[in-house]
Image 1 (cartoon, rainbow, N blue to C red):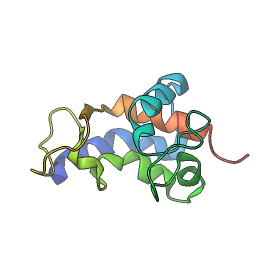
Image 2: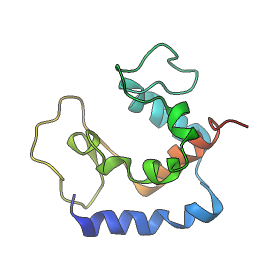
Image 3: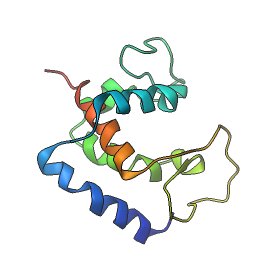
Image 4: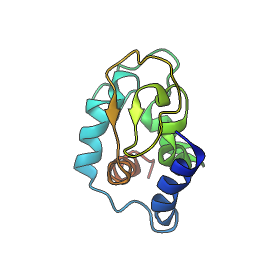
Length: 121
């Protein structure tokens, strides 16, 4: 993905920083369970799942920079190999080692809304 595409997606998501996610929690959980749980522990869905040192969503939600991390996860390794953002160039020519999937800015808002439910009270 080129930098202008990342800037475009971030431009759509930056208003979330101040107001927090306005996405659909149930849709975000569904996305996380369907795709993210392949590697990450995602809430109570797969408490003993995940791959090795891959951080759980609960751990990521506790980080001060969690919002930025989830807003830009699609460009953070290893995600660019199998996550697509519509109308953007692929960041790498490496072959995907798992089934690819596409996310939209709305999907990311939904995912962040779900992650907000995992933050400690």
